Length: 502
Image 1 (tube, rainbow, N blue to C red):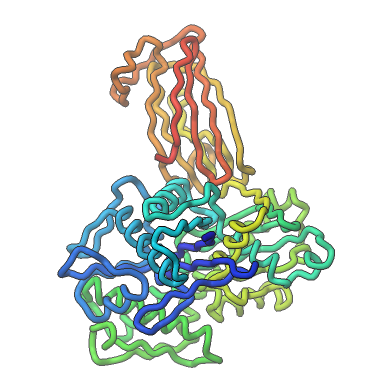
Image 2: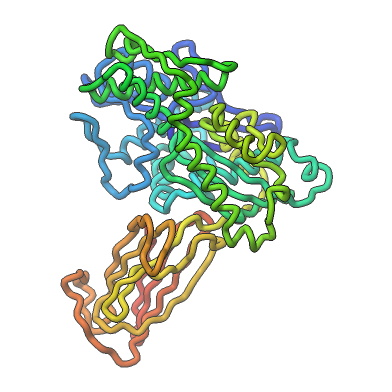
């Protein structure tokens, strides 16, 4: 069975094809059926095995233990062995993810009445601004949970662009097959991405992308939580009480999307095991608290539209865009639509009819049909080098590079050991990386006399001049943003290959 999966910060959505139409899979527990599986786990105090999804939220309100929400956010800084800690609970994040995905697989089997050994062939989606470690660990955990994972990973805004192209919203694309430009505004539970995508029949080209790694529904929930805490002067809550209250704030926030002009939000503190009171928050005061966060997303749109890549594409005004397409569960917040329409006009802005499911539906289309996707790197990738005693960041693949891509660099080293520190960053100013994320640290012996039975370290580095000792660095970046480097030296042609994110 072929599936499109959106592993989200708050919820996970699965789409499958029936009669050539992508549908959203339903998940049931205790008589409750939903189009999403909450990305949540609960580990009861009295036993080590956890429960997940809808059952995790049920257990969190009735038992003692540890509730884990928004684990996807922790993948931003993933490294092997990264722990998750909450109070006395401690576990390896990779183990927690594999457990959740195993449960997801079982939920899919039960939902579709499939045999236990059914091959589930999935196309995964990731945020456009996710780094290599995030992409690789997500794929690895799905594989270890028993899924057959497509070699291709689809960025979430591109998946929504695919869903948009089949929605019938573009008369030009439907009637003429002419290229159109869509600006996808993707605001989920934990991240915000905005991508400009050129759409032609079964051909999707990412022109430019921007985003904020920590902006989404979780932050909106936290704002409401803080307002409740201030109003009721709450302090000294346990980790579980905090998470239960956050969940109730999330539920109250989601009511806004389905209620006409509400004046107040009510949050029951008794349900969060805090007190027998409830908090009453004015909606407009809540929106005022959220406005600086929402405006950050609008600033990113303007930043993208002013970028050189957009100018090079010939986009000079909003009139050239077919639509601004709002997707992601958090885009349903009325304040978002109000701000977007106020700035760009009602005719230009369109909220997806299924904003929470748009990504999974697009991925399902992609896994079933032949489509061409041209992605770009969303961040700068490079290495720290030294020249004249000064350290600087040397880009290898710059932000906006079309992938797959390759690059060859030749150097003539002035020391015996190469110390390679690879990283990615949002920006580079005057040779300094801005918001860097270290990837790999590699030591490579430039000295032909080095005994390869001993691995070099930083302590072995010495200045040393060589005659005609050229070192070749060959970089490749595949269509999923996974980068490898092949280091080789002359004259003996010693060659070492690394997948850099590890």
